Length: 260
Image (cartoon, rainbow, N blue to C red; front, side, top):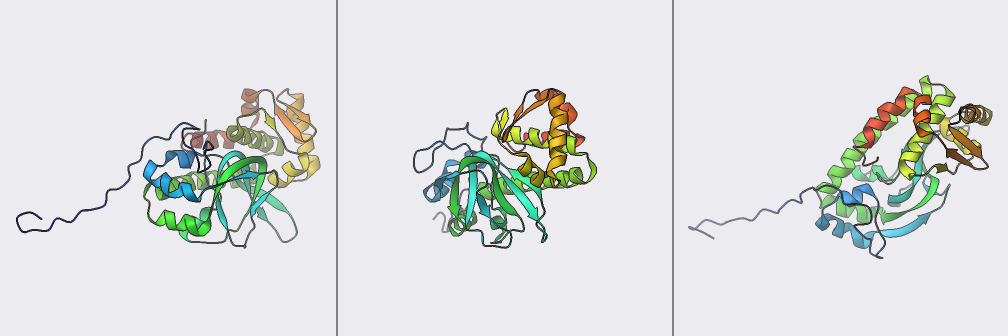
């Protein structure tokens, strides 16, 4: 109160700073956090999320949510990679997006939707922090940087999905396979990509013989080695040259997503 006038305090807004280094922040169990979005939050907002975050192991092919079914959890991956897959009534499927440590699985929750149109499946095993959908929505409603970071991710991811749609329609299978392997390596930081040709075919929306033939072309060029259930990348630069132009477009988005 001053000069007879009431002074009304306004709440201070959290300010965004640069993301912390991986491992600089821990979950409630004291385990290191590597997820880019969680590392980008100010302390006051992360501390609202922290008590609700549960560390879970996410084995390969584990389904995080199904199309049309209720989304029970949002997931912030620390390691591994999730595929978002469109399914048809006759059993066919094609990958429409991927999420690693740069993002969140369960994005419909950010706008109050409890169901998704895609299957979210662990393409490569890893671990992550999950939060119940109700708790996530409660925290989201009283933060400012978290919605901003998720909106940024949604925009960048939407651009990726649009580019993948064009790629699946316009480019040859060997180019698409090269692009896909590069996108995987961007998220797992390893030469070894643990996937079978059968699963690759499902992700690329084609038949297994086509994938095996394309993988053989890349192997003959000395770019990869096909092993049982695994693809090893030998020559990343050569693989970039073998990929379609879509990878160059997608690679420009990596910095905005917190990837190398």
